Image 1 (cartoon, one colour):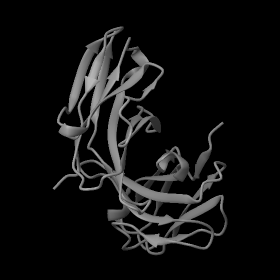
Image 2: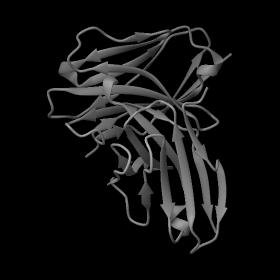
Image 3: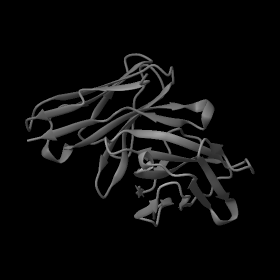
Length: 115
Length: 113
């Protein structure tokens, strides 16, 4: 069974609008970490934002923010005022457990921002 | 300036040949990783390391070896390359002080013919 699921395969939005990408995860651990990454057309994978499970406040970095709903095991990525250069594939990821190798990635959501 | 750099960025190898993919990081992170990315499979962990001299098997280690001679350098070695190892390989370093956030290199595209 997948530990991290992104159900939206692709999304298209108009430039300067807000988009939300969904991600649900599965873990038995009480402490875990959630991440969003962006993979550009050149293939580069860039870290965007992190949410620690024990924090109640939603993380925000620049025009990226998270909608962390712990009871629903959900971590949505919100991009406000989208720009053309936000077009990319976005991956959700989770790290759990004591080992630093236990990373699980979703299959990604492709975002196209239309001018 | 890129903190995780990989070389070569592109490589064509012959079946049965030896391939070494190199990774250098300036983040001073203890943890380093090698992943491969394939359509339909996403990112899969091959080997990882917790510091100089240590290497551990990930989820798909068969056909690969790893070497971590120093804090900065982590290599992935394909002793006998096969066409099934055609893929894009990513190295990453992990920041344990930030939930082990992974920082990826630019990727190395390997084609085995």
